[in-house]
Amino acid sequence: MVKPHTDATRPPPVAGSQRPFDLQPEVSPRFSRLIGDRVVRFAEDVLGEDIDAKIARIRTHHNETGHDPFGFDPDTTRYVLAGAALLHRYYFRTEVHGIENVPGDGRLLVIANHSGQVPLDGVMIATALMMDADPPRFPRSMVEKWTAELPFVSVLFPRVGQVVGSPSNARRLLENEESLVVFPEGARGISKTFDKRYQMTPFGLGFMRLALETNTPIVPVAVVGAEEQYPSMGDIKPLAKLLGMPAFPIIPQLFVGMLAPLPTKYRLYFGEPLRFEGDPDDDDAVVEEKVWTVRTAIESMLQRGLEAREGVFF
Image 1 (cartoon, one colour):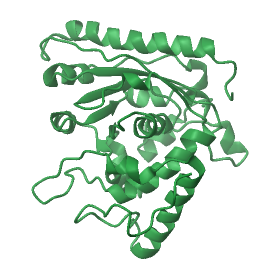
Image 2: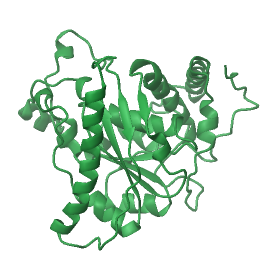
Image 3: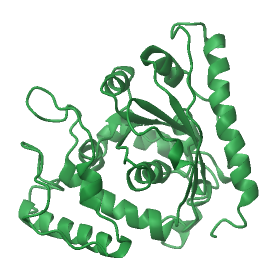
Image 4: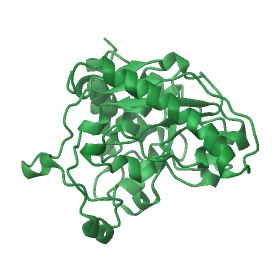
């Protein structure tokens, strides 16, 4: 069992970083840190794994002021990783296959199918990259622009390394040899209704043009289990438009006062890296052929995963 860290042994925060979870001014930063540290210690005791050691192995790139240019804060990340690791190991009981296919260093695009109404599939992929890959890979995710307008989320996401999706942001991260998680289905994938589960929506072409421009390998990932966590029976489009959301799903849990996702069993399949050559400015038809290769790899792993599982919850 991993021993709890003391103040003397805990890695110091990055100079100039904001206090963890200082998202509401009325909450004392010292009190927030105390609660966060207890969460980390509890997770380490339960998991038998050293969260701080994972964080310490993260390679980041600082700007001229010594800060991560996208707002990443190691302290906040260690607290969030502790909670995510508990979900990963005990709530969703995630099976991780092929994690050895993830390169240990260098720029990387992780491309996956998307589903589940809320991006818990991204959280589980990110947690697997941190907790199961050796060495750990710190994932950056391209999040929807509308999340930057949400209270709390707009502050939390940058602190845990997530970046508003844009070609310039993605290019900059890859030029810094970071690993980047992208869901080419976007909001269309995550908002699918239950009758369309495991039917991938069309992929955008941007990730492939980016891979060609930056000479970045692609690791395809298939996620099994997310489709059933929040089964959507429909979409109230007028309400979604009013709230500025991609969809407002009709979820059975809401009718019984349950906000938590169903404890489905996640299965993640990491495929072998794919490398592509060509002109990033080629016609769409040429780029679509390369995108089809990635999509087919994900579909193949999805099918194998669905055939192998005996049930949604086990």
